[in-house]
Length: 166
Ligand code: CUA
Image (tube, rainbow, N blue to C red):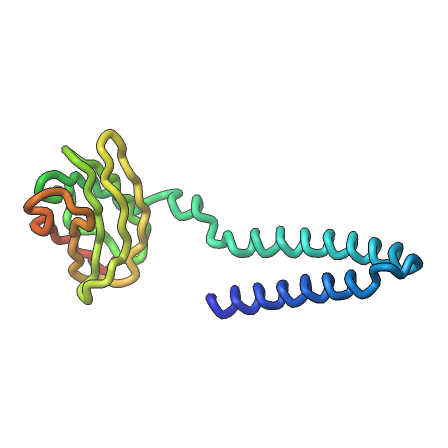
């Protein structure tokens, strides 16, 4: 994906550079101005069309489509210094909605897999319910930890979440 973005960026930069060079070369040649303006207008239209197409394609999967119908809902509350989940088991391969709250200060909720890699993370913010929809790709034992320093026992905010094959 990064390579694609880089290639597209470099190509577009080369195109824009070529246009500038072309415009600079034809400056002063009166009869060429009309044709340069026509080409410039065509280019603006073409770049606009390309921009719209790239924007639409890059929005797939549409973020809102993911949150349509969760297979399970987990209500998570963070507090000094614990995580409380109303269920400790969720299915793999289907969207799970996490409603994240805090009982006191801001906490940084993260769900990590068996290799310690963050699967997703969000904030637990006083006065708000933060919803995260996530589809676990594989069953296993995950850990819920806190990523934001929230007091002396911050490191003790630690809970387990089991993802089972659906
Ligand atoms: Cu809660 Cu750090």
